[in-house]
Length: 236
Image (cartoon, helix red, strand yellow):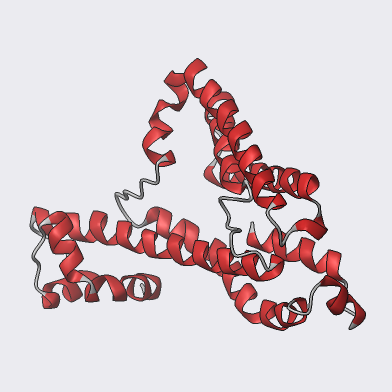
């Protein structure tokens, strides 16, 4: 219940968005009562409580975490062009998910998430291997990320074309669809994003040292390579 309140507080404030998007003009008092375990009765109330709010809350969660990770990556590398997308992690995750959907469709969501994260790790590792740790602040890592994105995207498209009966249901998801039918996946995802708190608590001091450059931070006793590997892992 606490999770639902915290994630939908902004949703209540942005009621105008909900009205325009779904034409659900529910009074704020009724919205609060629905969040306070009042059983929905009308169709509009069901849509609001089990579709609109979970979708908006999921968008807020995902957007917040992507923004946090993007900021972390840019500060680590001192490269304003870096993001989870330009490092190839998204393409690696997408390819891993397609492979799981085709060859292991019965895999549980938790194991699927592990495989998808492994795909992200491999993609980022490939980008870093091409660019090198000492070229993260330049254009080389961006070009390497673009090349890996194109390569993995081509492999993914080929698999989808060859096995479209297994993967066609993922087209909309791959485009960024966040539609929810209930709160199940919100509760599944939220505990896994606690790592964001670790970033906020532990990263600032390290990032201050990294602003001096890798050589400057290393001269002050910071183990640069292990720290970079750890922060990249946390970001993934």
